[in-house]
Structure formats: structure tokens, C-alpha cells
Image 1 (tube, one colour):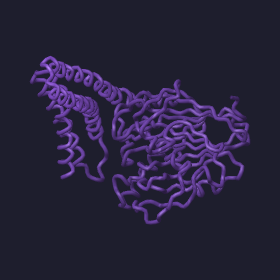
Image 2 (image 1 turned 90 degrees about the vertical axis):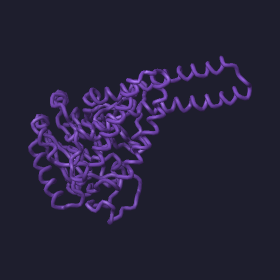
Image 3 (image 1 turned 90 degrees about the horizontal axis):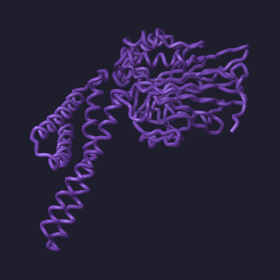
Image 4 (image 1 turned 60 degrees about the vertical axis):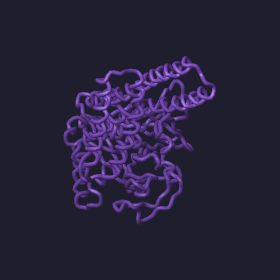
Length: 433
């Protein structure tokens, strides 16, 4: 309880400071009342939703919008605070100079009018994040983008030259709302008419049952050679049930049953062979594995590849992109997550068998950033946590693609980093520059 009181007090102090910009521009007490009532509602709603949140509950839409409203109201206010604080420093320095130089009343009046001008600028700039968040919540999260890549491999079996894969990731069904908008996204996936669909994990937020109302929608996904999936860190039920083995086992049973209803072949540290004209490629799938100690570590490349040949062509689904080239670290069998099965193995890059293409998700691109492909601009704060956070990467002749995600989590929107449907075409040969 103490932490919530401290949080509210900090917000109140910052809010009062931001209010000075409003008070500089108007003396209308109705506007003052609206300002404080809006702040009180947003902060109160956020505290109510999260202070009463208990483990075992699902993350609801109400929780998501509590976060969205807090961002929508207070990120613009941070801009006001920065401007007002800077202006206060300048005003304080000028006031001292005026006193020492015995400035005229006209100079002091000029200082007051300047504060009004700065307040107008600050409010104008604060409108930018406000409208961006507003767009992200109501439009951006459905702004599906089809991103296409052609990847060349000299050792690709000739029968698979031109083979197409649609990758989707991070559906997070517990966050989804509009069936009409989601159906549009499903139709867009089917329009690609890819040979196979690969889903790289995080079907739900906390519990398998979150997918029940969406089975008929996502069950419409279709591909000639079938649909394959792996599990992400949110799919295990640990966020809801902790270390309760009985509840986790039941959640796993429900999860696997739902995957079957969706028509997905769930691959768990195993592989599947796709054949064409007597030739084949392998689809590998591992359970969640990543560099962070806070997520389940159940993936095993050794198990997934134990039945494949040395010269096979391999495509891997691994939810967390840090599995691709994570740095050497100490693996502790008594990891803080007691439910983890920590496997001792190297990363994809250094693995003993050649994996041509790795498909991952997990990062969502933080659902916030700036991307202007024509100018080569791609940035999100998540890059400081995951260096390979979105798009295509190549290391030592091996490719990694990190999908930005189909759905969303916690914040119910996307700003600048749009939901992604990836289409990858496999080509035999060497790419011509």
C-alpha cells in the first residue's frame, strides 16, 4: 500500500507543476476543474486496477486501458513540465539580473508575457504525444503491415525455390477486442496464399482459456502445407499460476487442445519435414528459451535436431530472439523461476548443426518507435534490451527474422511500430546486388 501512496504523491507534485502552464493561459475555473477531475479519475482508475490485481487473474481490457489513459494524460504533461522547468530556470536568472540591475517595470512585464508564450509552445508540443497515443489505441493496433523478404540460399533444395512462408507472432488473445478488425487481419494473412504459416509464440497473455472466444476467428487461417506453432513465455500459465504444478499442467492440456482446434501443429523441441518432389526441408520448433532469467527456459536445440541430417535445410521457430546469439552466461540449475527446465546448450549461431533461418517474435518492437524504411530509420527503446528487436538480420550466413507481433500486450495500442504479417520467399542461389 505504501508504494501506491508514494506513487500518487509523486504524480500529484508533477501534475501541480504541469498545471502552471494551464493557469498561465487561462483564468477559467471550469477548465481548472476539468483538468483536476480528469487527473483524479485516470490516477484513481490505474491504482484501483493494479492495487487489486492478484496472481491468477487474467489481464483484462480494463487493465490495458488504465495504462493507456495514464500514458495519454501524463506523457504530454511531462513535456509541459520540461518546458516550464526550463522557463523557471531562465526566469529565475533574469529576475536576479533585474534586481541587481534595477530593471524597469517594462522588462518585468516582458518576462511575464514570455512565460505565456512558452506555455503556448509547450501545450502545442504536448498535443503531439496525446494525439499519437490516441491514434495508437484506436487505430494503430489494427494498422496491419505485410512485410516481404526474399532470402537466397545456395543449398536450398531446388523443389523449394520460390517457397513462401507467412510468419505471425504474439497474438496475445487476452488483449484482443474487435472481432471485425482481427478478422480483417486474418483475411490479410490468407490473401498471401503462402505455402505454410509459422506462428512463433505467445498465443495468450496468462491463461489458455483466453483463446476460447477467438478459436473460430483464428481457425480460418489456411496454408497449403499446414500451420505450425511454438510456445512463448506467456503461454505456459506461469504468470497466472506461479509454481502450482496442477494448475500449470491443466493449463498446458487446454493450450494443446486449443492449438489442435486452431489447426496448428504445436512443435515442442522437435521437428517436422515438408516434402516436395522427393526433396524436403525441416521445420524445427523449440520451447521458450532466451537470455533473460525471468522467462521460462525449456527450449532444446539438441532435442529438436536429433533426428535431422548434417546437410538438411533447416528453419527454426524460437520465440525469443536472444536465443539466436546470446552471450555466454552461467546457467544455474536452481534458477529463481522454479518452474524452468534450464537446458545447457549454445546459441543458434554456434550450434553444431546448421540452421539457415530462425524466426522469432517476443519484443513487439515495444509497440512504440519510429520507422521510416525509405530513410533507413528504425528505432525503438526496446533495442537497448534486445539488440535484434525487429526485422531481418544476417550473421555468419545465418538469418534471423524478428516479427513485430500481430497483437499487443499491456498498452492496448501501437505507435509507429505496427502489427506485422511477414511473408518470406525462399530462393535458391545467390542474391544479385
